[in-house]
Image 1 (cartoon, rainbow, N blue to C red):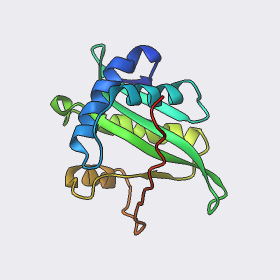
Image 2: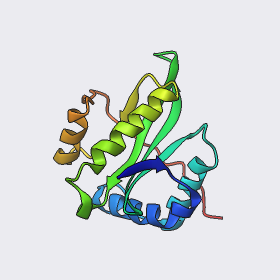
Image 3: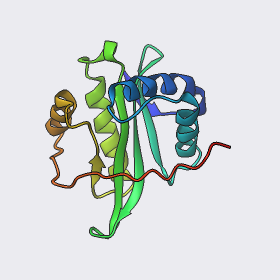
Length: 152
């Protein structure tokens, strides 16, 4: 098992994992072209964040991204943990814990003083996984406004 930074060569496997993630999330549906475009935005600009994969025997079995922003409350850089998934067939083998620990270490090394994440309220397993790693539930409620532009 090895955690490493993702590369452009990984994009097909990463899009497959994201399709699995977005299929299980209530609010999203997969769109491989959009996912590839978003992944490239992270890969080509390290100031935006970091994209990590966990692999075993040369196969990528999980992905996580940490996106960087600033908290005016903390007066410091913070991270947003996004798109964490381990292939369902590979769960229970320690990949997720290793991937999450690596993402936290990357955020710390990048100067982040906090990591925030979103998970579906009904996803009890994911919530328990993050709580075991020290995350706590917030009283804040996420809200969204779509600013989608027409496709070019």
